[in-house]
Image (tube, rainbow, N blue to C red; front, side, top):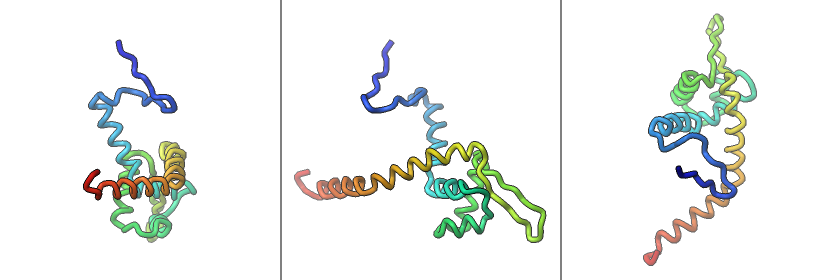
Length: 137
C-alpha cells in the first residue's frame, strides 16, 4: 500500500482524481464555476435578488444572449433561482440559492487572489515570452 505524500505547504486534494468519473465530475463543476460570467453573476447576486436588466447593467459588457445562457446554466445547476411575478409586463427576479450562496466565499477568495497576483503573473508571462523568442532558449 502506497501513501500519497503531500508537499509541505500544500493541501491534499480529497478523493481520487485519477478515477475517470471523479475527474469528469470535478471538471464539469469547475467549468461552470470557473467561467468568467458565472463568477461575475454570482458576485453580483451576492448583494441580493436582481432583475435581468439590473444584472445586465451591473455587468456592463455582457450580451443579452450570454447573460441568458449563464443564468439558465446557473439555474440548471441549482445555484440560482428564477422567480416570475404575474405582473404586466411579467417581472422576473434572479437570486442565489443556498448552494449558490455557498459559492460566494470561494469565488471572492479566488478574485482576491487574482487581484493580488496579477502583476506577478504578468511579470512571469513577460519573462517566459522573452525567453521563448531567444534562439538559444
